[in-house]
Amino acid sequence: MNYLIKNATVVNENKTFHSDILIKDGRIEKIAPNISLKYVIKEIDATGLHLLPGAIDDQVHFREPGLTHKATIYTESKAAVAGGVTSFMEMPNTQPPAFTQQLLEDKYSIGKHTSLANYSFFMGTSNDNYDEVMRCNEKRKDICGVKIFMGSSTGNLLVDSPLALDKIFGNSELLIATHCEDEKIIKENFARLKAEKGTLQPSDHPVIRNEEACFESSFRAIQFAKKYGSRLHILHISTEKELQLFTNLIPLKEKKITCEVCVHHLHFTSDDYERLGNQIKCNPAIKSSNNKAALWPALLDDRLDVIATDHAPHTLEEKGFYRNGEGLLAPSPLERAGVRSSYEKAHSGLPLVQHSLMLMLHYYKEGKITLEKIVEKMSHAVATCFSIEDRGFIREGYFADLVLVDLDKPFTVNKENILYKCGWSPLEGFTFPSSVTHTFINGNLIYANGAFDESNKGMRLRFMR
Image (cartoon, rainbow, N blue to C red; front, side):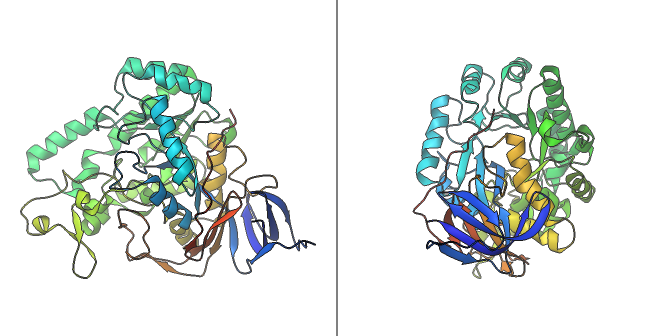
């Protein structure tokens, strides 16, 4: 179906203006005030609503294949669409990890048949799959990038061989996305604290995975990238110290080294471990308030290039929680009784993709960021950073990936409206001042005021390389 969106307040390319938008055959046909047509078309009255380009999340973990008790591409893409995220790029740490071209294409097949949002998948790296990684050079228009875990102890996802890193940075023609934490520093911090305290708590997490671990690893990745002129994108910057590694003196289109900040590092601080415990245990850790305070101005002055979520769902049991008789999140009975702490066993990661745009609109209402900057960092800059074809902007001829939001319609997160398969959120009970009302993907109205039309699926993202 084609659509005419009437009377919208459009936020796009650093401008806010009133306009109609004509959607035809999946793309934006016309942007103009007072569009009138001689043929019948489905009209949506957007009076009082703001129209934004759909958010593009460049870092999610949707857990399929192999970890589908936590999430699936279908469930998490549905949550994303309800939150105004129209495209995502998913990470390779599934079971099995996406270490071969065949395994990578298997994920694309799942996305094609089940994802409500547009999708792309990162190629995974290990110390010994160099040949498979290099085959991505032949498909650089079809794959978002290569992912390197430079700080991870999960299976064989950690790439700690200098030779492997040197070869990948020296020869990959794709964007290289890195998780930067120094494994040696992390292990030393853990051993020291464990010896001192015996029982560790969630509040120890930012001490173990500290600022120095992040800085040293990010600095090392940048050294590799500068040595070869590689296209490097460092994920989830979480520290004040790392900000000195990045610049705003170069236009984004010309940057060879870019970086991302995630919504949880802009929202939570280490003070929140007392209230939320393992719910906000994630890697890199949520740290002290001086880091959050430094991230905001770096985002606004373009040292930080894009906003993402690192959406990483786990079951309540895996996080050391359950729902009590009132349906509220509570620590496990053994932990509550003081028998043990679940910190060491709790999985790292938190679900966020349904609520990321609304969280940033909350900060708009608080005067922390403009609507134009939200759109830039969650849509325009992601499309530019990854060279995504025909998306991320409200432009004639571009795919109609669009979101309508009501800035004055509150939305309270509760267990009934959480769409993540894991069924919980660290934002449960939080009331956002604004809501997503409609989400268009490739011109199809997939979400409207709480209802879904799942007859159309998302498309594979393409890249201009």
